[in-house]
Image 1: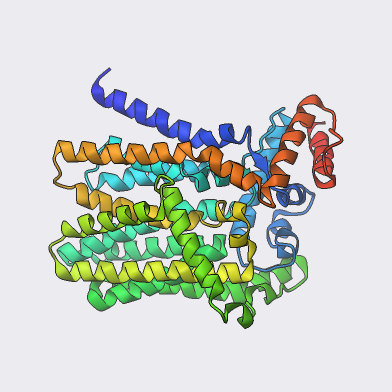
Image 2: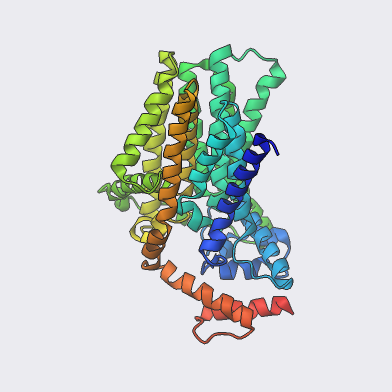
Length: 454
């Protein structure tokens, strides 16, 4: 077996282990409390359309215009039911595995164009897959929204970077039909993100603003900017008119928009935005070896400096810096609005480390990958080896902190309930005997699973 095959096999084994790690670490996965109801209603006798376009049941009366995610949740429930009938106890959803695999594939394929070897690219993918937010989110059977927004967001960042650089270097002189492809791709990526989740909708709006800003520096990017704005317009129309009309036609009621309104008094003292800043800093360190704010900040600053240093064009540097500042500000605004709506996003420790920060981490990770890939171009073998060594240390830091962060989340208000109950439920299903320690919701789900097995 030659060296290339050995390297490919080792990379594949490492990535497979990282994808499987949440299943192992959480002892077969965790059933979030709300999903107990979701799975049952997605497997009832209604039509698929009736199940998907029913925010009253799927979001407890709130309307968030994310019916695409409900459809993925429906597929997750179908897979759950099929595996349960075969004697399995599948407490990790199909969509989580798809998200992990898609993230790894996107990183490896995207970094190939920057001549980053399989080894460094694999290490970078492992850095993302081993951070605690990813491990806990993919180990939890909940919603498909943010887990699937994350790889789409990474794909959008990598694709935009490649196309914008191409336009800057060669002027975008291509046949008309080829110039339309980037626009269609951007439109599709932004539309899918927005239909999956409110965070995805925010990223589509922010991305449209970024591309419009970019056209101020390079007008040849107007096709992608127009596509992004078009996606934002379609998403807004879906939110206010198209989605509610379908819900009315299918299920006979019009959803309300109260949930989408944030009381102004919650934003007056800027407390949500101070907490949002802390959340951005904290989840940056969780991604980068669970080190410290100072160390992770220094590493990000170094990546930015080294990445931009490889580009002598001052106009390109200024454009990147302006957009980077806008992206950072947008994340603080996004988390601030989320915290203003749901204080537990920050106030509950388990929620700070689970689910909600994952799309942000995907965005930060993709940007860092681009900077690192750009910086490594032209480095000697020794320099690349040192960089790989640093990434290995960061991965080790991530893994070594898993149990510590699990202890923190287990002492918080939510995981302290759902994780022990999940373990008791699994044991009850294995023994075909309901444990008296099961609380009502998990006991009823035990009975539901037993019916599926019959």
